[in-house]
Length: 341
Ligand code: NAD
Image: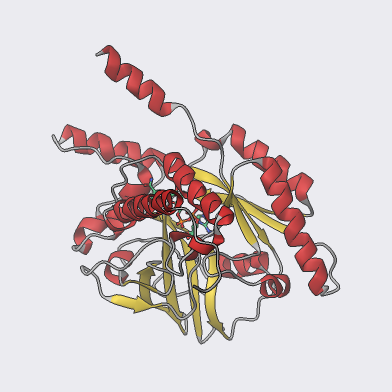
């Protein structure tokens, strides 16, 4: 009736099935900390959904999973409104796609022309953990929350207080009146192996993987249980800020480190796409010998003026992207073993 083309019923049906599958997997992953498919399988489903929406834009509803940050707030926790929204990241799955993404962002930045030339790229590891938002007022940690749907998260303050490397009081002086600090809580690979070995020795079931173990550990009802888990954190961004004058992501990292917050040692500010691709190859070769698991590389415009000019979609910033390494063959091997048994 409104003149838009009506998709054939079979396409709509296919679309609705895909939406339902993506929702189901997101629920298992974010709410239950227990995914039933691998990340690569999920990414493929999600990509199919994006492709179908690109071909049939009339199908896209406001509440499509592609328009929302995945995750909700479980009734087991108090809901917390973030002062500034938390976003997800756009994924690319090949170096060619990454180059095209960077070229587009550079063209966007040039249009806004802030006179600083092509942006520098802060390139860092994508830590496979759980996003957490820390709220500090006058240097004191007053609240910690999960990302949730990006607007509202879950209050996990008591659990976060058990993580020793997260300062409850920032070091130094001249703190901003208010700052939201975002980062990733994770379990290092070695600690995960040791923790699982101890579980098995005690006759208990081992945890499936470090990411879900970290998420499950932080979303415990009893902080004493969280305290037993070897949780670490790296901070990688800020949200609302009042009285914080930094002008770039890298300057902010230096400030956060000076306040005693855990920043990752593995980040570099690179002049262009060539250096970014080299970084990706370098870490691709040694991704399994790092202290923690990574599921890719994050590339961000370093200066905040260009970040602001590029802005956000409803789900992701236009100034950052996540490159995902190709999935590995672990599953096939596991299956082979099962078949042989
Ligand atoms: P994402 O994990 O791809 O990217 C966004 C997140 O990356 C941010 O929220 C942030 O917490 C994190 N991050 C890690 N290191 C970062 C850094 N250095 N800088 C900035 N952010 C950093 O997006 P998402 O929306 O959270 O979830 C998608 C991911 O979850 C995919 O990897 C997907 O495969 C997986 N997933 C899997 C299933 C499943 O069933 N297996 C279901 C849903 C989602």
